[in-house]
Amino acid sequence: MPASRDSNGLLRLGGVSLPELVRSLPAAQSATPAYVYDLDAMAGEVRALRGAFDGSPHLVAYAMKANTAGAVVRAIAAQGAGADVVSGAELLVALRCGVPPERIVYNGVAKTDAEIDQAVSCGPSGIAAVQIESVEEIARVEARARATGRRARVGLRVNPSLDLDGATHAHIATGHDRAKFGVPRDDAARAVDLCESSPHLELVGMGAHVGSHFTSTGPYVESADVLFGIVGALRAAGRLRSMTFVDTGGGFGVDYVGPVPGETRAPVPAPSDFVRAVRAAQGRARLDDLALYVEPGRSIVAAHGILVSRVTQVKVADGARWLMIDAGMNDLIRPALYGARHRVVPLYAPPSDEPWIPWRVVGPVCESSDDFGEHPLPRAAPDYVAILDAGAYGYTMASVYNGRQLPAEVFVSGGRVSARTERTPVEEWVAERVGAGAG
Image (cartoon, rainbow, N blue to C red; front, side, top):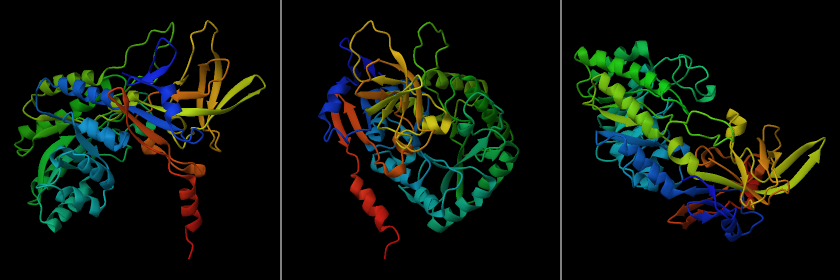
Protein backbone atom coordinates (compact mmCIF):
# COMPACT_ATOMS: atom_id res chain seq x y z
CA MET A 1 0.00 0.00 0.00
CA PRO A 2 1.14 3.64 -0.37
CA ALA A 3 2.85 5.48 2.47
CA SER A 4 0.62 5.90 5.51
CA ARG A 5 0.87 7.25 9.05
CA ASP A 6 0.67 4.99 12.11
CA SER A 7 -1.01 5.81 15.44
CA ASN A 8 2.21 7.38 16.73
CA GLY A 9 2.38 9.83 13.85
CA LEU A 10 5.24 8.05 12.07
CA LEU A 11 5.09 7.81 8.28
CA ARG A 12 5.61 4.23 7.10
CA LEU A 13 6.20 2.60 3.72
CA GLY A 14 6.15 -1.16 3.27
CA GLY A 15 6.06 -1.62 7.03
CA VAL A 16 9.22 0.45 7.56
CA SER A 17 9.24 3.56 9.75
CA LEU A 18 10.63 6.35 7.59
CA PRO A 19 11.93 8.46 10.51
CA GLU A 20 13.85 5.43 11.73
CA LEU A 21 15.06 4.75 8.20
CA VAL A 22 16.45 8.27 7.89
CA ARG A 23 18.30 7.90 11.17
CA SER A 24 19.89 4.69 9.88
CA LEU A 25 21.21 6.25 6.68
CA PRO A 26 24.94 6.97 6.67
CA ALA A 27 26.24 10.53 6.78
CA ALA A 28 22.93 12.12 7.75
CA GLN A 29 23.84 15.51 6.27
CA SER A 30 24.30 14.02 2.78
CA ALA A 31 22.04 10.95 2.90
CA THR A 32 19.11 12.84 1.43
CA PRO A 33 17.45 13.32 -0.95
CA ALA A 34 16.64 9.62 -1.10
CA TYR A 35 13.99 7.66 -2.96
CA VAL A 36 12.37 4.84 -1.00
CA TYR A 37 10.44 2.08 -2.81
CA ASP A 38 8.07 -0.64 -1.60
CA LEU A 39 8.92 -3.61 -3.84
CA ASP A 40 6.19 -5.87 -2.43
CA ALA A 41 3.46 -3.36 -3.24
CA MET A 42 4.77 -2.97 -6.79
CA ALA A 43 4.69 -6.73 -7.24
CA GLY A 44 1.13 -6.72 -5.90
CA GLU A 45 0.11 -4.18 -8.54
CA VAL A 46 1.34 -6.54 -11.27
CA ARG A 47 -0.53 -9.50 -9.80
CA ALA A 48 -3.76 -7.51 -9.64
CA LEU A 49 -3.32 -6.27 -13.19
CA ARG A 50 -2.62 -9.72 -14.58
CA GLY A 51 -5.64 -11.08 -12.72
CA ALA A 52 -7.88 -8.74 -14.72
CA PHE A 53 -7.14 -10.76 -17.87
CA ASP A 54 -8.95 -13.78 -16.34
CA GLY A 55 -6.51 -16.20 -17.93
CA SER A 56 -6.79 -14.88 -21.50
CA PRO A 57 -3.55 -14.54 -23.53
CA HIS A 58 -1.77 -11.33 -22.62
CA LEU A 59 1.47 -9.56 -21.85
CA VAL A 60 1.95 -6.88 -19.21
CA ALA A 61 4.98 -5.09 -20.66
CA TYR A 62 6.21 -2.83 -17.85
CA ALA A 63 7.18 0.60 -19.24
CA MET A 64 10.71 0.76 -17.90
CA LYS A 65 11.11 4.49 -18.47
CA ALA A 66 9.04 4.96 -15.31
CA ASN A 67 11.65 3.34 -13.05
CA THR A 68 14.69 1.36 -14.20
CA ALA A 69 16.08 0.36 -10.79
CA GLY A 70 17.20 -3.27 -10.97
CA ALA A 71 15.40 -4.25 -7.77
CA VAL A 72 12.17 -2.78 -9.15
CA VAL A 73 12.50 -4.49 -12.54
CA ARG A 74 13.30 -7.85 -10.92
CA ALA A 75 10.32 -7.62 -8.55
CA ILE A 76 8.00 -6.85 -11.45
CA ALA A 77 9.47 -9.50 -13.77
CA ALA A 78 9.10 -12.13 -11.02
CA GLN A 79 5.31 -11.72 -11.36
CA GLY A 80 5.41 -12.73 -15.03
CA ALA A 81 5.56 -9.25 -16.51
CA GLY A 82 7.62 -8.33 -19.51
CA ALA A 83 9.11 -4.97 -20.46
CA ASP A 84 8.43 -2.06 -22.78
CA VAL A 85 11.81 -0.46 -23.55
CA VAL A 86 12.69 2.68 -25.48
CA SER A 87 16.49 2.46 -25.68
CA GLY A 88 19.27 -0.06 -26.00
CA ALA A 89 20.31 0.66 -22.43
CA GLU A 90 16.82 -0.13 -21.11
CA LEU A 91 16.83 -3.33 -23.16
CA LEU A 92 20.09 -4.41 -21.49
CA VAL A 93 18.70 -3.63 -18.02
CA ALA A 94 15.59 -5.72 -18.76
CA LEU A 95 17.59 -8.68 -20.03
CA ARG A 96 20.08 -8.60 -17.15
CA CYS A 97 17.21 -8.41 -14.64
CA GLY A 98 15.80 -11.66 -16.02
CA VAL A 99 13.12 -10.47 -18.45
CA PRO A 100 13.02 -13.04 -21.29
CA PRO A 101 13.51 -11.55 -24.79
CA GLU A 102 10.15 -12.92 -25.91
CA ARG A 103 8.45 -10.71 -23.30
CA ILE A 104 10.08 -7.46 -24.46
CA VAL A 105 8.69 -4.89 -26.89
CA TYR A 106 10.84 -2.01 -28.16
CA ASN A 107 9.16 1.34 -28.84
CA GLY A 108 10.67 4.65 -29.97
CA VAL A 109 10.63 6.90 -33.00
CA ALA A 110 14.40 7.28 -33.55
CA LYS A 111 16.06 3.95 -32.85
CA THR A 112 19.67 3.80 -33.99
CA ASP A 113 20.91 1.04 -36.27
CA ALA A 114 22.90 -0.39 -33.36
CA GLU A 115 19.78 -0.50 -31.19
CA ILE A 116 17.77 -2.23 -33.92
CA ASP A 117 20.58 -4.79 -34.33
CA GLN A 118 20.58 -5.34 -30.58
CA ALA A 119 16.82 -5.96 -30.46
CA VAL A 120 16.77 -8.24 -33.48
CA SER A 121 19.82 -10.26 -32.42
CA CYS A 122 19.21 -10.96 -28.73
CA GLY A 123 18.01 -14.41 -27.73
CA PRO A 124 17.26 -17.27 -30.12
CA SER A 125 14.89 -15.20 -32.25
CA GLY A 126 15.03 -11.60 -31.03
CA ILE A 127 12.53 -9.81 -28.82
CA ALA A 128 8.73 -10.06 -28.96
CA ALA A 129 8.50 -7.14 -31.37
CA VAL A 130 10.35 -4.11 -32.63
CA GLN A 131 7.53 -1.57 -32.75
CA ILE A 132 7.73 0.40 -36.02
CA GLU A 133 6.50 3.99 -35.72
CA SER A 134 6.64 5.29 -39.31
CA VAL A 135 6.49 4.04 -42.86
CA GLU A 136 10.06 5.27 -43.30
CA GLU A 137 11.31 3.12 -40.43
CA ILE A 138 10.22 -0.10 -42.13
CA ALA A 139 13.10 -0.01 -44.63
CA ARG A 140 15.61 0.62 -41.84
CA VAL A 141 14.44 -2.33 -39.73
CA GLU A 142 14.34 -4.52 -42.83
CA ALA A 143 17.93 -3.57 -43.72
CA ARG A 144 19.20 -4.31 -40.24
CA ALA A 145 17.38 -7.67 -40.14
CA ARG A 146 18.95 -8.59 -43.48
CA ALA A 147 22.40 -7.48 -42.25
CA THR A 148 22.14 -9.55 -39.08
CA GLY A 149 20.77 -12.60 -40.87
CA ARG A 150 17.57 -12.61 -38.81
CA ARG A 151 13.89 -12.36 -39.66
CA ALA A 152 12.75 -9.57 -37.36
CA ARG A 153 9.45 -9.78 -35.51
CA VAL A 154 7.82 -6.37 -35.79
CA GLY A 155 4.69 -4.57 -34.68
CA LEU A 156 3.17 -1.45 -36.18
CA ARG A 157 2.32 1.37 -33.81
CA VAL A 158 -0.60 3.28 -35.30
CA ASN A 159 -1.32 6.87 -34.31
CA PRO A 160 -5.06 6.92 -33.52
CA SER A 161 -5.26 10.63 -34.45
CA LEU A 162 -7.55 11.59 -31.58
CA ASP A 163 -8.03 15.12 -30.29
CA LEU A 164 -8.19 14.66 -26.53
CA ASP A 165 -7.59 18.21 -25.30
CA GLY A 166 -7.69 18.38 -21.52
CA ALA A 167 -7.64 14.61 -21.01
CA THR A 168 -3.93 14.70 -20.10
CA HIS A 169 -0.96 17.10 -20.19
CA ALA A 170 0.12 18.22 -23.65
CA HIS A 171 3.66 16.96 -23.09
CA ILE A 172 2.48 13.36 -22.61
CA ALA A 173 -0.32 13.22 -25.19
CA THR A 174 0.98 11.01 -28.00
CA GLY A 175 -2.05 10.00 -30.06
CA HIS A 176 -2.90 13.18 -31.96
CA ASP A 177 -2.06 14.28 -35.52
CA ARG A 178 0.77 16.61 -34.43
CA ALA A 179 2.61 13.99 -32.37
CA LYS A 180 5.84 12.42 -33.58
CA PHE A 181 4.61 8.96 -32.58
CA GLY A 182 3.10 6.22 -34.70
CA VAL A 183 2.15 5.43 -38.27
CA PRO A 184 -0.67 7.77 -39.41
CA ARG A 185 -4.02 5.99 -39.66
CA ASP A 186 -4.22 6.64 -43.39
CA ASP A 187 -0.81 4.98 -43.91
CA ALA A 188 -1.56 1.83 -41.91
CA ALA A 189 -2.56 -0.34 -44.90
CA ARG A 190 0.55 0.71 -46.87
CA ALA A 191 2.75 -0.04 -43.86
CA VAL A 192 1.21 -3.50 -43.58
CA ASP A 193 1.87 -4.10 -47.30
CA LEU A 194 5.54 -3.18 -46.91
CA CYS A 195 6.01 -5.41 -43.86
CA GLU A 196 4.18 -8.40 -45.28
CA SER A 197 6.01 -8.23 -48.62
CA SER A 198 9.44 -8.39 -46.96
CA PRO A 199 11.13 -11.78 -46.44
CA HIS A 200 13.10 -10.23 -43.58
CA LEU A 201 10.14 -9.05 -41.49
CA GLU A 202 7.38 -10.93 -39.68
CA LEU A 203 4.45 -8.68 -38.78
CA VAL A 204 3.21 -10.12 -35.48
CA GLY A 205 1.27 -7.25 -33.96
CA MET A 206 -0.33 -3.84 -34.20
CA GLY A 207 -0.68 -1.32 -31.43
CA ALA A 208 -1.54 2.22 -30.39
CA HIS A 209 -0.57 4.36 -27.41
CA VAL A 210 -2.72 7.44 -26.98
CA GLY A 211 -0.78 9.07 -24.14
CA SER A 212 0.03 8.92 -20.44
CA HIS A 213 -1.74 9.52 -17.14
CA PHE A 214 -5.39 9.15 -18.14
CA THR A 215 -7.72 9.26 -15.15
CA SER A 216 -10.74 7.81 -16.95
CA THR A 217 -11.03 4.80 -19.24
CA GLY A 218 -12.85 6.71 -22.02
CA PRO A 219 -9.82 8.02 -24.00
CA TYR A 220 -8.05 4.69 -23.65
CA VAL A 221 -11.01 2.71 -25.02
CA GLU A 222 -11.52 5.29 -27.78
CA SER A 223 -7.95 4.72 -28.93
CA ALA A 224 -8.37 0.95 -28.70
CA ASP A 225 -11.53 1.13 -30.80
CA VAL A 226 -9.60 2.91 -33.57
CA LEU A 227 -6.88 0.26 -33.45
CA PHE A 228 -9.34 -2.63 -33.40
CA GLY A 229 -11.24 -1.10 -36.33
CA ILE A 230 -8.09 -0.95 -38.45
CA VAL A 231 -7.07 -4.49 -37.52
CA GLY A 232 -10.55 -5.85 -38.17
CA ALA A 233 -10.77 -4.25 -41.60
CA LEU A 234 -7.36 -5.54 -42.66
CA ARG A 235 -8.12 -9.05 -41.45
CA ALA A 236 -11.43 -9.03 -43.30
CA ALA A 237 -9.42 -8.28 -46.44
CA GLY A 238 -7.25 -11.33 -45.83
CA ARG A 239 -4.29 -9.47 -44.35
CA LEU A 240 -2.39 -9.85 -41.04
CA ARG A 241 -2.24 -13.66 -41.22
CA SER A 242 0.89 -13.82 -39.04
CA MET A 243 -0.49 -11.43 -36.42
CA THR A 244 -0.59 -12.73 -32.85
CA PHE A 245 -1.27 -9.67 -30.66
CA VAL A 246 -2.83 -6.24 -30.36
CA ASP A 247 -1.13 -3.69 -28.09
CA THR A 248 -3.21 -0.91 -26.55
CA GLY A 249 -0.25 0.73 -24.79
CA GLY A 250 -0.17 2.13 -21.28
CA GLY A 251 -1.08 5.46 -19.78
CA PHE A 252 -3.13 4.31 -16.78
CA GLY A 253 -3.30 7.25 -14.41
CA VAL A 254 -2.82 7.42 -10.65
CA ASP A 255 -4.34 9.61 -7.93
CA TYR A 256 -1.66 12.21 -7.13
CA VAL A 257 -4.16 14.39 -5.26
CA GLY A 258 -5.20 11.95 -2.54
CA PRO A 259 -8.15 12.47 -0.21
CA VAL A 260 -9.31 16.07 0.18
CA PRO A 261 -11.46 16.83 3.27
CA GLY A 262 -14.99 17.78 2.31
CA GLU A 263 -14.43 17.10 -1.39
CA THR A 264 -16.05 14.27 -3.32
CA ARG A 265 -14.28 13.22 -6.50
CA ALA A 266 -14.76 10.33 -8.88
CA PRO A 267 -12.11 7.73 -8.05
CA VAL A 268 -9.26 7.23 -10.50
CA PRO A 269 -9.83 3.85 -12.20
CA ALA A 270 -7.56 1.02 -11.14
CA PRO A 271 -5.31 -0.50 -13.83
CA SER A 272 -7.58 -3.55 -13.80
CA ASP A 273 -10.49 -1.27 -14.77
CA PHE A 274 -8.60 -0.17 -17.88
CA VAL A 275 -7.85 -3.78 -18.79
CA ARG A 276 -11.44 -4.92 -18.37
CA ALA A 277 -12.73 -1.98 -20.40
CA VAL A 278 -10.37 -2.63 -23.30
CA ARG A 279 -10.99 -6.39 -23.17
CA ALA A 280 -14.68 -5.65 -23.61
CA ALA A 281 -13.87 -3.50 -26.64
CA GLN A 282 -11.69 -6.28 -28.01
CA GLY A 283 -14.59 -8.69 -27.64
CA ARG A 284 -16.96 -6.33 -29.44
CA ALA A 285 -14.46 -6.17 -32.30
CA ARG A 286 -14.28 -9.98 -32.39
CA LEU A 287 -10.52 -10.02 -31.93
CA ASP A 288 -10.47 -12.33 -28.90
CA ASP A 289 -8.17 -14.78 -30.71
CA LEU A 290 -5.33 -12.25 -30.41
CA ALA A 291 -3.27 -11.78 -27.26
CA LEU A 292 -3.72 -8.39 -25.62
CA TYR A 293 -0.56 -6.48 -24.71
CA VAL A 294 -0.56 -3.48 -22.36
CA GLU A 295 2.36 -1.25 -21.36
CA PRO A 296 1.77 0.23 -17.88
CA GLY A 297 4.53 2.00 -15.98
CA ARG A 298 3.34 4.78 -13.69
CA SER A 299 0.37 2.79 -12.33
CA ILE A 300 2.66 0.02 -11.08
CA VAL A 301 5.33 2.08 -9.33
CA ALA A 302 4.24 5.69 -8.69
CA ALA A 303 2.26 5.28 -5.46
CA HIS A 304 4.86 2.96 -3.95
CA GLY A 305 7.83 5.29 -4.03
CA ILE A 306 8.52 8.47 -2.07
CA LEU A 307 11.28 11.06 -2.07
CA VAL A 308 12.62 11.83 1.42
CA SER A 309 14.15 15.28 1.86
CA ARG A 310 15.75 17.19 4.71
CA VAL A 311 14.51 20.67 5.58
CA THR A 312 17.50 22.99 5.34
CA GLN A 313 15.86 26.20 6.55
CA VAL A 314 12.69 28.28 6.62
CA LYS A 315 12.08 31.78 5.32
CA VAL A 316 9.27 34.09 6.38
CA ALA A 317 8.78 37.36 4.49
CA ASP A 318 5.83 39.58 3.58
CA GLY A 319 3.43 37.09 5.05
CA ALA A 320 4.78 34.19 2.98
CA ARG A 321 6.33 31.10 4.54
CA TRP A 322 8.86 29.04 2.59
CA LEU A 323 10.09 25.60 3.58
CA MET A 324 13.43 25.06 1.85
CA ILE A 325 14.43 21.43 1.35
CA ASP A 326 17.45 19.63 -0.07
CA ALA A 327 15.46 17.93 -2.87
CA GLY A 328 15.08 19.97 -6.02
CA MET A 329 13.83 19.86 -9.57
CA ASN A 330 16.99 17.97 -10.48
CA ASP A 331 15.76 15.14 -8.22
CA LEU A 332 12.05 15.29 -9.18
CA ILE A 333 11.40 17.34 -12.30
CA ARG A 334 7.70 16.53 -12.78
CA PRO A 335 6.39 19.70 -11.05
CA ALA A 336 8.68 21.94 -13.11
CA LEU A 337 8.17 20.07 -16.38
CA TYR A 338 4.46 19.24 -16.25
CA GLY A 339 3.07 21.47 -13.53
CA ALA A 340 2.51 18.24 -11.60
CA ARG A 341 1.52 18.32 -7.94
CA HIS A 342 2.90 15.84 -5.43
CA ARG A 343 1.73 15.89 -1.83
CA VAL A 344 4.41 16.87 0.70
CA VAL A 345 4.06 15.57 4.27
CA PRO A 346 6.26 15.45 7.38
CA LEU A 347 7.93 12.15 8.29
CA TYR A 348 6.73 12.62 11.85
CA ALA A 349 3.48 14.32 12.80
CA PRO A 350 2.66 13.90 16.51
CA PRO A 351 -1.05 13.80 17.31
CA SER A 352 -2.18 17.37 17.97
CA ASP A 353 -5.27 19.55 17.75
CA GLU A 354 -3.24 22.45 16.42
CA PRO A 355 -4.20 23.21 12.81
CA TRP A 356 -1.52 22.95 10.16
CA ILE A 357 -0.64 26.04 8.14
CA PRO A 358 0.34 26.53 4.48
CA TRP A 359 4.04 26.38 3.61
CA ARG A 360 5.54 26.94 0.16
CA VAL A 361 7.93 24.03 -0.36
CA VAL A 362 10.89 24.87 -2.60
CA GLY A 363 14.20 23.28 -3.50
CA PRO A 364 17.80 24.50 -3.76
CA VAL A 365 18.12 24.73 -7.56
CA CYS A 366 18.73 28.19 -9.02
CA GLU A 367 15.42 28.27 -10.94
CA SER A 368 12.07 29.77 -9.96
CA SER A 369 10.44 26.60 -11.30
CA ASP A 370 12.14 24.61 -8.51
CA ASP A 371 8.90 24.75 -6.56
CA PHE A 372 6.82 21.88 -5.17
CA GLY A 373 3.82 24.08 -4.39
CA GLU A 374 1.97 25.08 -1.22
CA HIS A 375 1.15 22.38 1.32
CA PRO A 376 -0.38 22.22 4.80
CA LEU A 377 2.34 21.37 7.33
CA PRO A 378 2.85 21.84 11.07
CA ARG A 379 3.55 25.39 12.25
CA ALA A 380 6.83 24.15 13.75
CA ALA A 381 8.74 23.21 10.60
CA PRO A 382 9.57 19.49 10.41
CA ASP A 383 13.13 18.24 10.09
CA TYR A 384 12.28 15.94 7.17
CA VAL A 385 9.48 15.69 4.64
CA ALA A 386 8.33 13.06 2.16
CA ILE A 387 7.21 13.87 -1.37
CA LEU A 388 4.57 11.24 -2.09
CA ASP A 389 3.76 9.20 -5.22
CA ALA A 390 7.27 9.69 -6.58
CA GLY A 391 8.03 6.13 -7.66
CA ALA A 392 7.55 6.90 -11.36
CA TYR A 393 9.56 9.35 -13.46
CA GLY A 394 11.57 10.48 -10.46
CA TYR A 395 15.04 8.98 -10.43
CA THR A 396 14.88 8.11 -14.14
CA MET A 397 14.50 11.80 -15.01
CA ALA A 398 16.91 13.09 -12.36
CA SER A 399 20.01 15.09 -13.29
CA VAL A 400 23.11 16.64 -11.77
CA TYR A 401 22.06 20.18 -12.69
CA ASN A 402 23.72 22.82 -10.50
CA GLY A 403 26.35 20.23 -9.61
CA ARG A 404 23.99 18.34 -7.33
CA GLN A 405 24.38 14.63 -6.69
CA LEU A 406 21.88 12.10 -7.93
CA PRO A 407 19.61 10.97 -5.08
CA ALA A 408 20.11 7.77 -3.12
CA GLU A 409 17.67 4.85 -3.52
CA VAL A 410 16.39 2.56 -0.75
CA PHE A 411 14.44 -0.63 -1.46
CA VAL A 412 12.00 -2.12 1.05
CA SER A 413 10.68 -5.69 1.00
CA GLY A 414 9.30 -7.98 3.68
CA GLY A 415 8.98 -5.10 6.13
CA ARG A 416 12.67 -4.21 6.07
CA VAL A 417 15.30 -2.49 3.95
CA SER A 418 16.48 -5.08 1.43
CA ALA A 419 18.97 -2.96 -0.53
CA ARG A 420 20.17 0.58 -1.06
CA THR A 421 22.34 2.65 -3.37
CA GLU A 422 24.25 5.61 -1.98
CA ARG A 423 24.59 9.05 -3.51
CA THR A 424 27.63 9.55 -5.72
CA PRO A 425 30.32 11.56 -3.92
CA VAL A 426 30.47 15.21 -4.97
CA GLU A 427 34.19 14.89 -5.64
CA GLU A 428 33.54 12.41 -8.49
CA TRP A 429 31.41 14.96 -10.33
CA VAL A 430 33.92 17.73 -9.65
CA ALA A 431 36.79 15.63 -11.01
CA GLU A 432 34.82 14.70 -14.13
CA ARG A 433 33.90 18.33 -14.83
CA VAL A 434 37.42 19.67 -14.12
CA GLY A 435 38.86 17.04 -16.43
CA ALA A 436 36.38 17.67 -19.24
CA GLY A 437 38.35 18.73 -22.30
CA ALA A 438 41.65 18.80 -20.45
CA GLY A 439 44.75 17.61 -22.23
